[in-house]
Image (cartoon, rainbow, N blue to C red):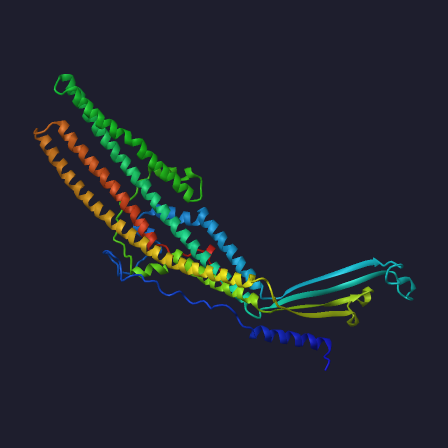
Length: 485
């Protein structure tokens, strides 16, 4: 039975749609990797380990408005974060391109072609009655091409592109978490250096008073020149530390400007800003296994494993036949008045089956390449899990140790304050000299400096722990979110 042209076209569309719907998908289906042994719990006591961790905007819980401003500005303007957003756009476009491979490619066009054929050419135009050597051909129509996804190569490619998009989004989330932590760490270092600078200046002032007294007593013969030189040595050593501390403070503030996506000098006004009293909490780190769902590096590694699994299917599909369909149609005429007449209709349908029968083993070698890449991705995921656990354990230990150190320095500072109070009382009673009182004051300033350094170290370790356990892991950001992403 011979069907009319429109029936043939309809039949072809139905036939190829059925083929597409019943086509199989080759290659392994992705399954979540087996759970990596995370141990039975933290290896050392973690205060609040079983409490729910409020980690989304952890810097907001520290009672420091300036820190909140800095972090929020960095999250909006930091160039690393903006680059991460651009990488997401790139990955999303690659996914959309892979999705487009499943649809036909259709083009349309129209032309008016004026041509003259040679009367002495292979076609004897001059000897054919009624055939003019000069002609104008009017043509309008469309062409379509479609490779039927018989064995799921395009679907596997879309799976892989979608997984890579998700991995890129997880990595971008990691960039945001890192920048938030870096801003907080740099701010703590800047304020810590500023407080240390004030204490060191007080120490130098005390030593200057001691030196002046020693010189006066030396002039009276009460002390030796060696005692004056010793006092001068202590003053000079303390005074020599001032430029380095000031440089650390300025360097940290300059670093804040860059982290905020601005010229380094933008935040120099912070050199004169005092940080509020800071309480360093015992963090509710949650269960040890909880960090795996909050760590972007672990999430990204799992998505890369999914993409590598899909790549095997893409390579495997090359072993099987390919079915391509070309179709075209339109109107062609020699007269503008007949251009869109039904008798000027033209069309063509061209199914094409191709099968690579011999390629020197290149396809099977490519499959082995993809399988090896998948094994690497699986090992990379396991490595990411273990690295995350190790990072969390290490930073928890460092933070606990820094809190213990701070507690001990605080005890030493309290003792030094009591000792200075006793010295003031004894000086008022005439039991000790001013030089002895200044010596007690110098020891108090040194204890204050040591305590400030311990507090800054603990604050920095706190930031590292927040980052290690996934602090800020589900920060909302419209730049990273899109429908169907």
